[in-house]
Structures are given as structure tokens and as C-alpha cells.
Image 1 (tube, helix red, strand yellow):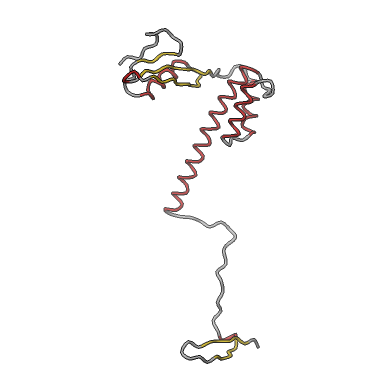
Image 2 (cartoon, helix red, strand yellow):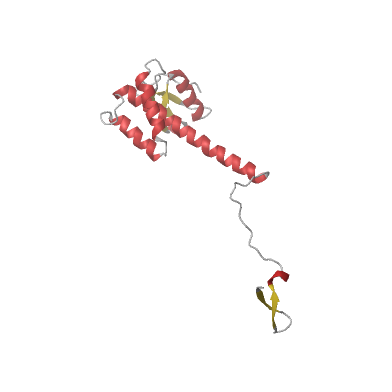
Length: 173
């Protein structure tokens, strides 16, 4: 029979009591399986994961478009195509997987009929004559021009492609 030493709080006496008569004190065990979340905690976690996934998707599609532009301009080899090498380094800095970069290189080098993305640069003059230079990556010049004008505000004073003569491509006030 195993005995436990018990100190009584009322007095200073020590008694030996059989172990079987004392209540068992066990530490709670943590479950190995994943816990099921419900309610507010689950919803908050779901929203946070969705934001993270959306941010990653945005980065990956941005890098994919830049890779396609670089491959069409200089070929699929990052050693000989400096622009492609820089885009791949940018992808690594943004934590975009190498698999995504390789997939976009393969798609851009094999498919010549896909959308031809171009880097477009626009000048935008706002209120007070403040100038902005905006770089856009698009396959449609007209849509990019409209999107840049919309994003710039309700009334940009003047907007044109970089290097275009003054008055060309004005956005009405």
C-alpha cells in the first residue's frame, strides 16, 4: 500500500493516509487533435486568413504579369535576360513561390497568342500643378488610361502618356 503525507491546515500535525482515499490530482492533458472553433473566434480567424490569401494572390498575379512581360521582351533564360532575373529576385523578396515563377515563364515562352501585357507610363497633373508619374501594367491601353484617371480622383486636371505632346489625351475636368 502506498502512503501519502498529508499536512492538515488546522494544525501542524502530519498524518500518513493511504493513497487510495485521497482525490486524484491530475494535470489536464492537451488534445493532440485540432480543436474546433466556433463563433466569434472562428469568424475573426477566417477573415484574417482570407485577407492573407488575398494579399498573396495579388502579389503572385502582379509577379506573373511582370514575368510575362520580361519573357516576351528578352527570352525565358534568367541568366541572359536581366529584366527576368530582376523580376525573379523581386518575387523571392515578396515570398512568391519559385513554382509560380516557373509556371509563368513556361506559359509566356510557349504561348504567343496570349494577352500582350505592356508597361505603360502616364503623367498626371493634379490640383496646384502637382505632377505624378504613374506606371501601369496592362494589356489594354484604353482601360489602363481610364483606370488611372479614375484612381487619381474625381477631377484630375490633365493626364497624358509619358512623352506625349501637351494636350494629347486630356481628361476633361
